[in-house]
Each structure stands twice: as C-alpha cells, then as structure tokens.
Image (cartoon, rainbow, N blue to C red; front, top):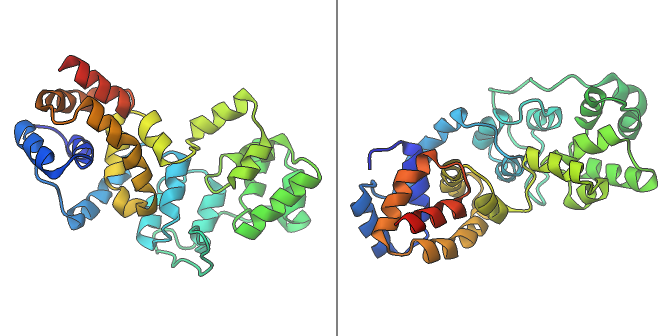
Amino acid sequence: MHSSDTVQQAVGFLLGLTDEDTAARIRARIGLPGREHREAARSRLNRAWNWPVLPASVVLWVLEQDDPRLNVLVWRFVGTDLGLRRALARGVPFGPGRTDPVPVRSSYDGQEPEIPESYLRHGLVGALRRADSMPSARAAGSMVLTGDDWRTVTAADSERPLPGYTRWVLSVRPDCPPALRARFGSHPKFTHRLRQAGVLEGPAEYATAHGPAVRVLEILSLGHLMFPARVRDAEDALRPLVRTHLGAREEAWAVLAQLIGTFHGTAPELMMTAAAIA
C-alpha cells in the first residue's frame, strides 16, 4: 500500500474498529504499517497546520480539553472568529465545569482583538442590540466569552429577541449553548448556514455525514489525543458499518484502500462502494 500518511491513518482508524486478528491480516494484505504508538500519533498533529478549515463543533471538542498545546493548534482554525480568538488569548476554559484559566501560549499571547467601542459605551447586551451589520455583530459577539455571558444573552433574547445579525453571529459560534441556538431560528436558510459552519449534533454525525471520508477519518484517528471524551461516539457509529460492509473481507479492504484517497463522499458511502466493487 503505497499511499500518504493521511490515507494510512484513515484506513488504520477503520481497522481499529475490527478485532486484532482481522486487523493484522488486513494490514498484511494491503501493506499497511502496524498500528502506531500514541507518541508517534502526537507527532502527527503537526500536519494539522495543513488541514482545511475544521467544522465548528470539532473545534469545540478540542477546546474542551483545555490543553494549551492543543489550543495552539486551534488558534490556526478559529480564523476570523473574534470571540474564540479573544477567549483563547484570555485563557477562558471550555471544559464542562472548569473555571481555572488555561495557560496562554506565546504563539498567540497578546493577540486579543480590540475591545469594541460599542461594548465600552453600552455594555454587552446594549452592544448586541445595536448591531446593525455583520461586522458590528461580530465585534459585539466577540465579548460573549463565559458561561455567565451566554446566560446573559439567553435572558436578553428571552426578554426581547436580539437582532438577526447578532443571532447569526452567535449561532455559528461552536460554544453557543444548543438550547439558545435552537431559540435563534429554524428557518431552512438558518439551518443551512449552521451546516456550512460545521455545527453538528455530535461526533456520530461527523463520522457518518461529513466528507471527504479520508479527512474525517484522519481527524478521528487523532481523536484520542484531540477529543478523547468524544471519539468513542464516532467509533460506535462506524463500527457496525465496518462489520456489515467490510468485515474480514480482504478484497473489500483492498478496494477501500485504493479508493479512499480520492473519494469525495462520506465514510459510510466509501464502505458501501468498496463492498459493492469487491
């Protein structure tokens, strides 16, 4: 199997959902290197700098680890999300129940976005209500950082709905509470924007409904380092599909290894296609 590390990691992740004897036999059949140690996998995180944009929910799962080393990686993917950039620069924790600040690494220390004038003049809710454009909404929304801030936003929207720009900016934030996001809207255009941003119900949806399969599986292969509390849900969603479509069929695995590098569909579609061809 002469292929990239990305392909090897992706196929290896699926093989990890089978029993050890089957995995060893398939690895020998397709020429896949042995399962790597965790230390080797950690070194592969360096390749993440070459990944395309991560879905918003995947970013959140990594942030929930409150690991300064992983936050350096996340900084690369928050892009123009001023709220996440500010939270990282301030060491705001994202893990459930955590309150202690996260150490800030030198790679983004001191890079907090400028505090918007509207916030200084009108406070959080006042700035959010005065947002009349996407830029002003992004600026005001960047001051929503902690659980208390989100509760303040929820109370304000319950009292009187926030402007549309504000709702949109906050809804695509990966740390927006699901209940509040549901309040913000359910129009097809709204849900389409959420899909575009990569707001997911959970890891099972990411594993089964996102593509291309090779990229999704590569990221999941590092899940035990990046989001260990979440990766099992993805494994549980894919394991029965691996059993049904691939099982111990060497030819099906060989076809999958040939297809995966250029396949644009989801992981379930990849497995079904490989099985059908074999």
